[in-house]
Structure formats: C-alpha cells, structure tokens
Length: 374
Image 1 (cartoon, rainbow, N blue to C red):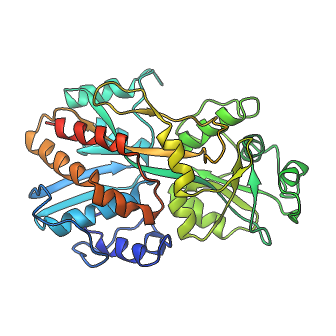
Image 2 (tube, one colour):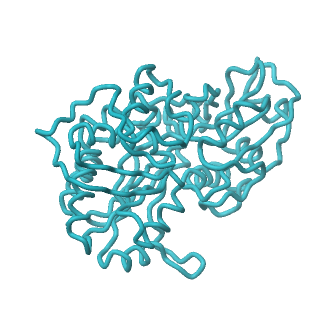
Image 3 (cartoon, rainbow, N blue to C red):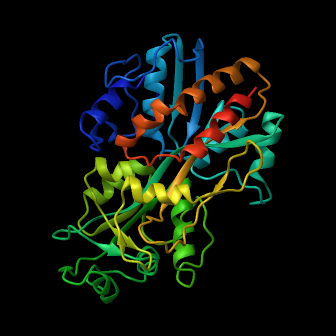
C-alpha cells in the first residue's frame, strides 16, 4: 500500500481529466517509475534531500501525495519518499510510535481524552516538541451510490442519516421520493458500505451527519463507524463494493467516486440541491475557522451550513509533524518535501485529481509553518 516513485500513477490519472483509473487500487506503483505527466518541478526550485523519508496515514490524500512525491522525485533523484496509505488512525499511531516522520490524517490531533489518552499530548511527547497539524489537501466526501436506472439523486442530512443508520432500507422509501420528484426509484434494498478501518473520512462524514441531523444521528463522531452496513477496508474497498452492488451506497472521497464512475448525490442543505464540484466544496473550505494556535493550523469546518451553493461534506487532510525534530536531518527532509507539496504549482496539479483548492490565505499560513519546522 506504500506510495513511492509513483509517476506512473499520476500520469495516467492526469491523462483523463477527473478519470482516476490509474489509482483504482491501494497497491504501489513500481519503484523507480518516473514516467507520466510533466510537472513544473525542477532541481532549481526544489530543496532536494538525499536518502529516505517515510510517512503513513490517510487514504483520502493518497492520489494527492502521490502526485507531490512524483514531482519531488523527478527533481530530486537521490530522494526516496514512501507513503503508506493505511488510514488516518494507523498513521497517527505510527507517528506517535516514532515509526514514521510524519502522518497524514483527515482530522486534527485530538486535544481531549479518549480511552484515557490525548493524541496531541502523546504526539508532543513522541516529538519532544509540540506537534502541528498542517492542512495540505482538501478532499470533498461524496455520498456515492449505484442504483440501476437512477442517474441523479438528491439527499439531505436527515435522509442520509436515516439511510446510514438503517432506518431507511429501500430506495423507493417516501422520504427519498419526496426529495426526488419525477425520479423513478426502484424498490431495491439499500446496501450500506462503511470504512472498517479507523478513518478520518468516517469521522468527517459523521460530523456532517450529526451537524445536519442531530436528532437522527445521535452517536458521537469518530474514526470508527457506529452506523449500520457492511465494512470494507479503505476508500478503495468501499468504492469497489458499491460499484459491484446494485443498491449500494457509501461515503468516500470525491476522487475515488470519480475513478470508480459512481453516481454522487447532490446535497440539499435547505437552499436547494448542491452538486459536488471543486467550486462548491471550495466554498466550504474557505469558510473554515482556524482553531489551532500559531503554526498549529487545525481548522473547524461548518458541516451544518445552510448557505446556498455550498457543498457541506468536505475534509482536510493534515500532515502531522513535529515542530522540532530530535533528528535534525529528518526534520530537514520533512520540511523540504512539505515545502514542495504546499507549493502553488503542486497544489494546482491536484485539482484534476478531485481535490478542492485550499484558499490562498490557508496556504500562506502553511508555508509559514513549514518554514518554521526544525
């Protein structure tokens, strides 16, 4: 599942705009592959390091970080970057265990206790310095479905919550029909698929359900699924399951829904249906508030927004880093790569892969924070 020297992945992905067939599995591209879409990276404008850098975590950013790694390694032939897309929960655990230099997570480190532990404190102890949450990739979450004969679908928070907690079980349920006048809905049973691994995507999606339908979705948001359905591992697993199941539905990153050619529901927040696009999702990111202090750039998203034209189900993938690394050379490597990942050229190259652009004011803060890593 590691991502290393993945030019071939990004090449095929970019060859068909928004068609991500090259990233359809969680398997790595062959080591040493450098073919593919060109990047603006060159040795002249990239701070290159020599040696290895290991990271782990979020599957939501897999396609994005793959592109960043490819372009970095094209410019820096002596660098080898391995990113293991195992899920946000696993990435944080490996970071705290000092097994990787940074972690990718679709939610910021927790500052409140869970099971007697506080993630942010554990990460600080592992680093010997405060750990920072640096937003790097913004990935809208699609409610993706596969229902024969249904090409367009509108859901709202209440109906979605009832589907995912098992209260609505057939596609022609009156509550779905009321949101989709003129659409012929079959009596096909609804088959819910969820992430069986600990996932930041799960946490962000359940934050949306709780914010949009608090009387229906009463469970606390978290990386572990608490609703109904059948579990599949990682984003590729739930996408593939829905693709092969008439009546299937899941929550998954936009890029995975695209690459599997799944239909995606429009979301009605009270001001009419909103389709998932880079623009509508970008509006949600732009409205996010920073809740971290200083160079800790943890953001709070408004999942309960009712603003017209805003797609509300989005996540931000953070790179979780030490502010000061005990191993100074490792800190230099992390800084060099993340500086490249946050660059304007690389960020622009992520848009065709299904990622909403981070607002310029957020990227400015990220750049400042990366510069401060030591």
